[in-house]
Length: 120
Image 1 (tube, rainbow, N blue to C red):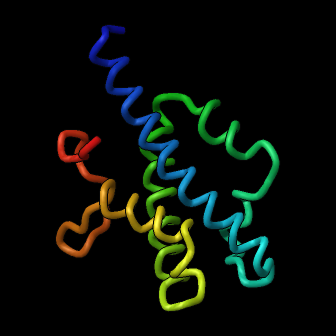
Image 2 (cartoon, helix red, strand yellow):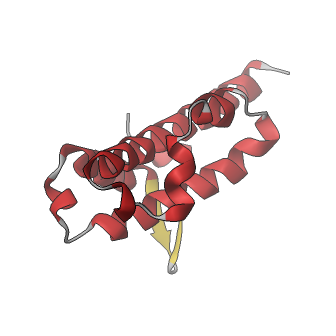
């Protein structure tokens, strides 16, 4: 494995952690405010050890599928919280900023921006 492959893996791992952290943080806020309001498919983010199992025990070949899953969860959560009292909260603003910086809409399909287009 050469340094370019390691660098590429590190970038994807960092992107994975950024998206996961934003989604997880807003889910925790929703759960604290009203646990019955949370979407069932997002409850796994609340499980103990989920972060470690999902991010830090992830092999390189699984990163892209997890990025796609977390991106879809972020978009779902964004539309779920829009036009509610959660929209004014700090966690929603962080999620919105992450979506603007990491995700793009190409021909009606939501996907991650290429690494070169993501500003630090």
